Length: 457
Image (cartoon, rainbow, N blue to C red; front, side, top):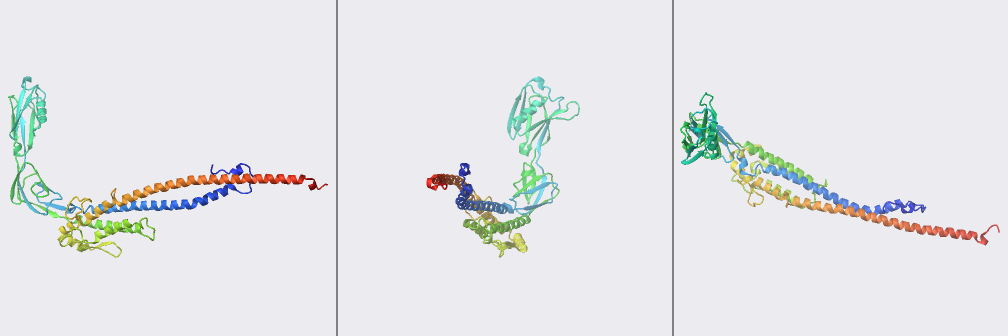
């Protein structure tokens, strides 16, 4: 019933605006309670926004740390190869810097065997009778017994047998007898095979024998059954494509330029994060996280990791400052490029250690020293995890906001009841006034009709 002017609707003829009076009374009661709830809601939403910004900033900083937190991140290598025509060399993250000599005397080859020619690939063999074929690979013999045989069905049976020998029909285009069955084995002498048949017309001739690759690496002779070799030079994959006329050189050189770029990128990300953190926690500008002591402690811990000695110090390089990266009076990291280059060139193993503890695949659940990048990554992951402070604080504030929204709804309902109560009270008051006015009019009329009140007598 709120919003209805009871008195005027009943034609009471009051001389004042009852509707405005009721609205003013209700608003007076609402204002204080509503303002208090709105202030709480606004503060909570501001902090939720601040926590979201903090998580985004920390995630960017973590991405920078992830470029440096594994030892393999520093294994950026450059391969110089003087035998490109015979050997293709590819270095992996586990390669060791150094120079290797290599000479290839022979390549691994697969056996290739071809049958006698036939006029068709679908015509019946052995006059439609059965055919038996024996294939021996690496000392093991498989016998294939076939009925209603033609060249195509023989090829299918060999391929289905899974012996490491593939069969295909080729057409030489040379007139009669142009269809032949070609068998190809796998590389390496151990994969040589023999094939025979009880059908005299199905004979085979080997046109290429299986053989091993032979090479000399760093003065040692090696034999391999394949041309794809990854177990001779640590962390280097060799693909043999030809033989060498003379000894060639494969040099694995450490390239520090990528590591330097990642380090400077990480420093820039930290500086940007520091600026954003100051904005979030600044009291003078009402930063949304200005009173959050837990978040401030996270920021303080991040700073401590960056400016203190690494949790896994090297022999000569123990901290960022010892490699030319220091902090200025504004809390920003600055770097001495010349000193940084010296550290990368002369103490690279130490640089790897102070950032990554010289280990890979670190986890936030491991409490062992993880180096600067590893410790930063672990700290951020703990803070932003589903059970971390930033996530649980945001969830708690969101839950609280739901309560504030309900408080506003409850206030609206309570104010509607208050307005209705005021309207009933004014209606009751108006009824009394009407009764009094009626009594007054009745008394006046009575007095005017009394005999002594008649002025004409």
